[in-house]
Image 1 (cartoon, rainbow, N blue to C red):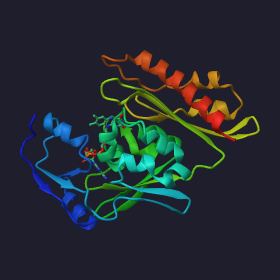
Image 2: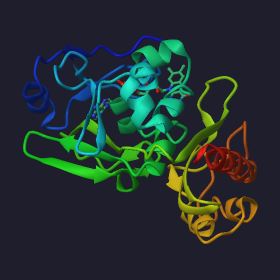
Image 3: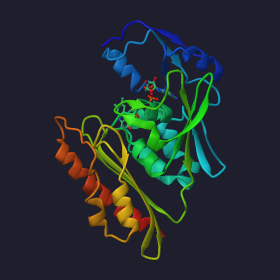
Image 4: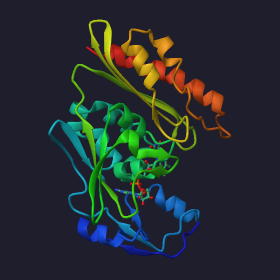
Length: 281
Ligand code: FAD
């Protein structure tokens, strides 16, 4: 399919990009891995796209003030292979390695993925488990939003018209904590039918911190807070993960019905938590 005709602009600075999108009429283009297929299917027909891929300062990975800061145009491959992320935020590197295939990981960007908010995207599970934050900038504002407030619904975030995700901020993982991302990949697309990210800290045999993010099951990724609470109260893994998805809507499609997705979320939460416990020292 061929998209409808559109104008293409490649601003050279962030200020220029922000000025171009200020009226909410133009669409940002990053890796194009999600937007271009939508345009080809004519599910999106922007009159003009603003390519932020060449804006200096929007990419790159640095560690500062107890955070790993990942520029929005950083590709999934860069997240997967970054020595900083592997050392300081390994859950994120492990999660990135599950995204699509090598072509998608070479071109798709982290900012594009979170802004797109596909309910089957991988990053949201890890970003929720990490209690990450997003820096959102417009021509007139600059704010930081928690991941749990950012993902609002299917393909819907708390981004306002004219705002760009400029940076993903992930707190450093404690070297003693265990982590794991477990995914049931759709056999055709590779997207998560269900994906679960877990982080565990222990003191002796006692779990002192449990964080569980779930993607793919419902209209948006969520934290399995009751399972986290039970694990931190000494419950066994099976009891805790039996609560995953309680009170959350689950999606149904030709591949997986809602009940099956909820069941998978519990099974894969059990696997992710057990693996994270065994990795925690
Ligand atoms: P684009 O497609 O350029 O943009 C996506 C949307 O985000 C657009 O609405 C755009 O306007 C907006 N946007 C982009 N950047 C910003 C920004 N910085 N600030 C605000 N808005 C912005 N993803 C997974 O998680 N797991 C998978 O297994 C997976 N498999 C895939 C398989 C295939 C074959 C393909 C084509 C894609 C797959 N994806 C998967 C999606 C992939 O990760 C995309 O890279 C990602 O969803 C979008 O990133 P992008 O940089 O390509 O964004």
